[in-house]
Each structure stands twice: as C-alpha cells, then as structure tokens.
Length: 190
Image 1 (cartoon, rainbow, N blue to C red):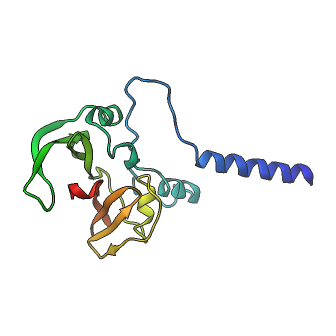
Image 2: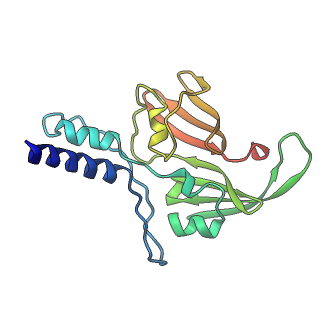
Image 3: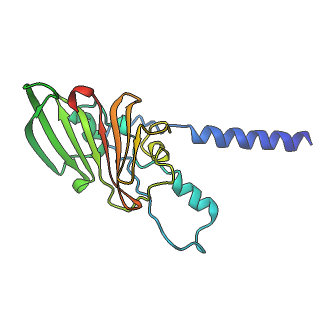
C-alpha cells in the first residue's frame, strides 16, 4: 500500500513539474522560433481524447518573449524579418511622431512595430486554423498569459485592458476562428 501511494505521489509530482518547466538553452546561437500552430482535424476515430486535450493545451507562442524587446532580440527568437519598413508613429493624443520600424516575420504570421527601439505593437495572424475556444480567455494561456475574464467581448472581438504589462490584448474573430491576435504593450503607443 505504501509503495502504491509513493508511486502515485511521484507520478503526480513529475507530471506537475513537467507542466511548469521552461525550456532554457545555454546555446547562444540562433534558435528555432517557439511557434506552434494548432491543427484542427475531424478524424475523431483516429484521435484519442488525450491527443485532443494535448493539442488544445498547446502553446502557440509566448508574447512575453517578444514584447518590449529590441529588433535584435526578436530576430534571435523569430529569425530575420521577411520584410521591414522604416516609418513614423504618431503618439496618441499628441502631434508628436517618433521613429518606428514595422517588421514582418514568417511571411506575415507576425507583424511587429518597433517604436522607439522596442516591440510595442504585435500582430499574430495564424497560418493554420485556430478555433476560438468556448471561453476566449483560454486562448490567453496559448500565448503565455494568465487566463482572465475579458473587459469586452462580442462576436467579432474579445479584448482585455491592462493585463500582465500590456495596455491592450485583442482577439479578432472571424466566425468560429481566430482572425488575428493584437497586442499593444505601452499605453502611449495605442
């Protein structure tokens, strides 16, 4: 009986510690981007319930690895941009403009605007279909944020304000699918 209790406790501990672990690498060379798309299939006979729950809990990317980072730091994560444009950004509520660089990665999957040197506006447009979960806040976990109730929700948009260091986080919806996710880091860059 004690052996069985020990085995169950050990297995639970290993399972919980594996769920919370972060992948840290000492390798200073370029890393493959940590971007995974959820693929939806209708082959229910071929997929076990554990495979289904595994894909439903899969991280798409961690937005905290990109937000407030320089273009060099983002390039280490996502690779070199496929397109880049120097531009000016108008600060909200003022006549002041500041230098900005709009960079596209992975052929449009990510569009990041670096304002005054750091990633302040991030748009993620999935290449593969991502179903909007019954509760859109569950999608936050798939981008590295804590699950929390939205400030605004309708059939087209779900939005959070002042969440985990972001001024605004939005999910734009098209029918049952995610059209794109939009992150504004700092209020002055809204």
